[in-house]
Image (cartoon, rainbow, N blue to C red; front, side, top):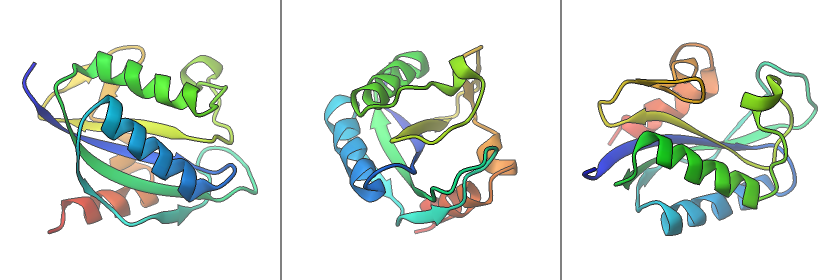
Length: 140
């Protein structure tokens, strides 16, 4: 597969949140592909679950030659490596997390499976913090 521009959203609400995001970004760059662009950090309240822990979020554009499913598996490995225990796909519930990495866009691809939906429409229509980060990412 040729190089694709991919939009990722990352979030953390446990531990040193900014350090968690920087670690994930370094792992993404090492394991998956170069970071083309990144936003500033943005704090947000938890969405779809109750927690006293505020999220720190960031959006990235990366280039990768991996397929959507290969990319998802690599991102899940990074989450696991960083200590994420619960996967929302398995637990069916949102909870506090050291790291969460979502694929929002993958080139012009539309991909739908039980484990992955591209584009990740919740980030466009249901989550204000996501829209703010995605708007920032698409500006010059």
